[in-house]
Image (cartoon, rainbow, N blue to C red; front, side):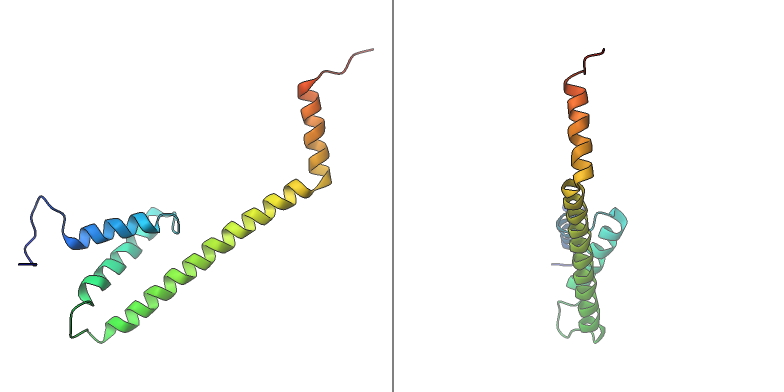
Length: 113
C-alpha cells in the first residue's frame, strides 16, 4: 500500500521536498524561504495529483508558478545589476588609475632623494 511509510525510508513527500530544496538553492539563497516553497510544491504535488482534483488546486498551482517566476526574475535582475556594477567599476578610468598606482607602489619603491 502506498499510504504506509517505513520508518527507515523517507516518505515520497519528504524525498520530493528534499530534491526541490536542493534544486531551488541557486534560485533562493534564503533557507527558510526555500524550505517553505519546497513544502508548498511538495504538498501541491501530493494533494493535487489525484483525481478528482480539489477545486483550489489549479489556482494554488498557478499562484505557486507565478511566485517562482517572480523569484527567477528577481534573481536575474540582482545578478544583472551586480554584473553591471562590476563593469562600471572596471571601466572607470579613476579606478583603473588608482589600481595601477597602487600596484606600482606595492611592486616597487620610489627612490628617496
